[in-house]
Length: 410
Image (cartoon, rainbow, N blue to C red):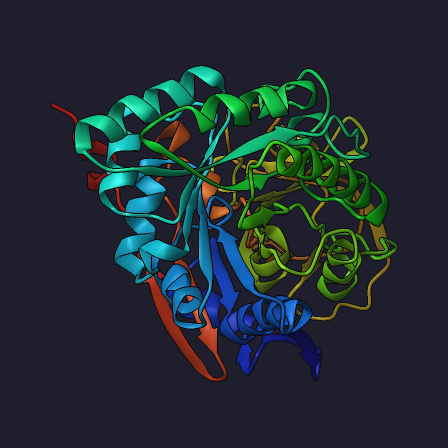
């Protein structure tokens, strides 16, 4: 919910330059009403069908944002014991929490079972055995689904493609029936579903449908072996529009197409993360210095790769714009940070107007995997996060200071 009014950029009804003056830079800024809209788009797409929209909280685990989604009726897709803790603390009902991850520790599994979450998505045969042993010790039955790798290739960054052959994720497609038959024999296991997640930032319906059709074949073979599932978890991965020319899928298109593949008597789980929070969050930064070196123009900002690692790690593109309209000639510019690394950049070869020192830039669509992946590398204290609701601004994570860098050190 960004818009220009009289050459000033606003988020909802708040001027971005005012946020910079009040809270300093760099700072993450979220639109509450954009988050609500994005979540409701999924709820409306699911319609009357029985199921859950589980927010992938690895994308953004801020407690205020989690509480907002829990209050809207969302479930939670978690990948660690810490995420389960965060979600329970934020108000998610245990019966709406699912737990995935290839390396669940015994301590995390025990915590999940004691918390009575909806299910654990099992990713290996040894993990199944461990869950069964822990459930026996706790004198309970563990509700599980298997994460199946459908071996579908994607047009996305290799680091976020999780459903193709040879990745660490899930049970190999050819071993799916074997896994369920093994689980059926376990006295402390209750089979409740099947899970598949093929990757992230997917813009095409085809790989989603291919994966769904392969999962349907597994379900049919399970039913022939008297294994009936309650839940089909279709995962997440829906992409957003980072660049102006990108064409994206809507939640309505995605869900309507996938639901056509399966029978109507199943409960469905979808696990969106990026498509709920990415375009609701942006990163506001200040230009510290300008320089020309080797024939290149540089804008050196106060945001570093420790605050936003996606451009360095994934070569990800985020649109960068001044927070005030400037009618000067655009020049090719690299927008970089202050970290002592050549890889510390936000955008390369961007056509930007001439922006003066100490003025502000907005790095768009950083709500997902921005603050969540930040660190204090170079001993840079973590930056704050604020939530905007109309004219109201709420600090949801305060700016860290130098003393905070020493927390837990002895």
